[in-house]
Length: 160
Picture 1 (cartoon, rainbow, N blue to C red):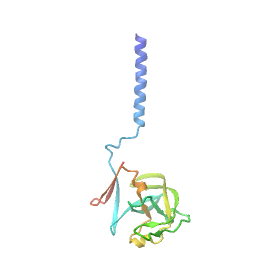
Picture 2: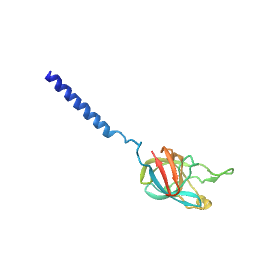
Picture 3: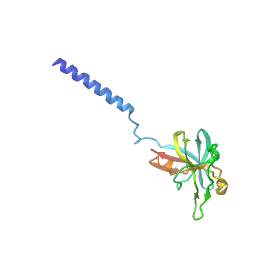
Picture 4: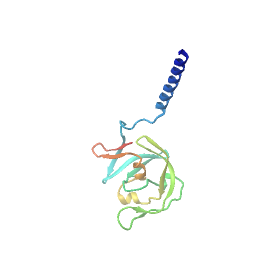
């Protein structure tokens, strides 16, 4: 009886140690997680956020209507990207883009090897009246459960 009791205790301890180790490896619960706060500034009712693209400081225009995040070819570096065109009907831009990967940092959070569209934005910033290096689109915003714009605090609250 003593040998069986000892064997059971050793197996129980091994199981308890394995469960504890798995708990350490499990991702944290986002149920009580604080939202990521992304500061913004407003220029002519446009929302601009600071970011880094491949380590280079950039200003991105929040564009909830853009399916993809778009980075200006000038910011990306030595790449021949197509010129964008303003849409003939309705608001927006159209054109071909290169689909490339960048390391994107927003609100101190890193999104490594993030696919983005790279285009030559031309004079779009002057056309809309604000200086920016790209558009922050739905592909990034959809990575969060909730996106809230807090105008009083000048932050975008991103919840996982």
